[in-house]
Image (cartoon, rainbow, N blue to C red; front, side, top):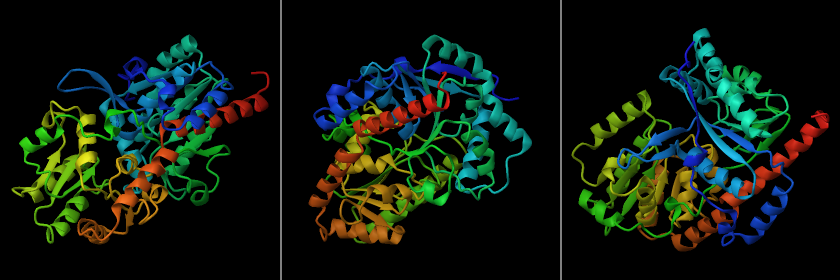
Length: 449
């Protein structure tokens, strides 16, 4: 069986410290409500288990939590819970390459890119990998005595089989949820139903998939307004560094932030740029993929991208922290948000899409292709643009650059929609309400416990 080399890392000490009171500037009423409801949450503690990775900055050697939007969420919420005297910890199992290859195949089944069911060997690897860190997990439970354990996403879904009955087990599903018609659904469902609750980011799941869990909740992601990435002022040194690479800030800039993959539709972003270039020859394109996931899809997408852009002026491709040094990754991303004229998101598989949220927070025009995430966040032509395809994306970008639309009011509306709905404080309040419900249900079902 694969996965015998799995490590089980307590990554709590690698998280930045934050205090809930520092967010009162954004929504004082929400902070007060959080404090009131947190008093009713058992202080026994909350564990988070995620397939996010503990990575090392290739320039500075510092450790950090990597893994895209989910990693950002974990870095913000765990310290804030601790500031409310709720003992919250983050654990990152790290399995071998064979396990992650199988996880990639599971994800292909989830999103419909693979039709053939998992082989018996793949099922064995996927379901049993958690057994290699079970002893470490149970030791951590014995030491810290958590009342609630959240397992994030599908990678370690089977860990539920190792958790004691007296602990509330919650599965938090962040990626696209599989259709009940897919071959992978029954396989995953047998694990899902063992959890006390299921949380998803997509409110349409109940409608499309019937009753996937008796205790199903919706809680969209959030941004942390205090993170460097979400500062509203361009980082010092950003323009100077980018100028050495050839970016001209006096000319229009289109940007897409996201890993290079077919799922993120990276090539379509380039095609939008080419369409806009016909009327704006000096337009530039920034493709920022510093959080790429190694694998066939990434290598294929990057190879094609380099091939079709070879020798072309005005296209800037970033896939390594060494390209932006001495800027940090977050400073680089913040600089893109602050200095781009238009943020595009051509990903058709955004369950939510934090890059959309972040761009709206930065008061930038956002053009996003239609997806669950863009539909949830964007009111078309009010706080951004939802388009059907690359052609309507091109037309919309041209309208913006020709000043045919009032983007000032639109971007202010976008910023306010994030401030009032998608900050970490709103997320914490939603989650505490879910925790309270789960604790109450557990008392009713198991009063002796």
